[in-house]
Length: 151
Ligand code: RB5
Image 1 (spheres, rainbow, N blue to C red):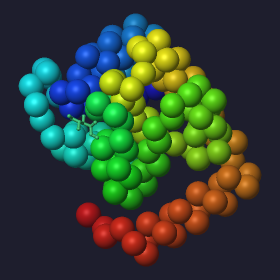
Image 2 (cartoon, rainbow, N blue to C red):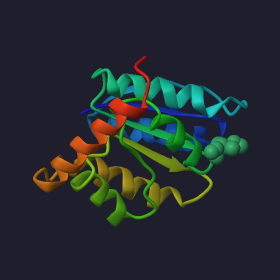
Image 3 (cartoon, rainbow, N blue to C red):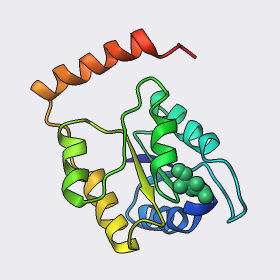
Image 4 (cartoon, rainbow, N blue to C red):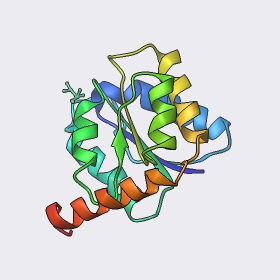
């Protein structure tokens, strides 16, 4: 799978570890920064990955900041993005099965590395159930048409 990743300074270490783990697992990784622990602004990085996913250049995206929350808010401003910030493996599974989430946001300061890796692994391998959930995603597309300005 082609996965675009980015982080701000507060998510840099978890992002680096995730890049290595995904490459070792055979994924095609697009690392969109940041490249150090120097302070940067998370909306810049959320936008990079969101555009990559919304434009079809990556299958999925992963964003890391301190809490996961800023990335989550910013990424969902881009049409076509369904960004989620699960705190548990169960939420991660359901975000794929019910919401067809295409960007995963994580907070490096909020959870142990192992929890983050468990969430990432299950999120990448879980599919979308479709059916009634597809109808609801169609309603979200209508919301985007009415409320999000085209780029
Ligand atoms: C940076 O200090 C922090 O605010 C950022 O990483 C993120 O948690 C924002 O939502």
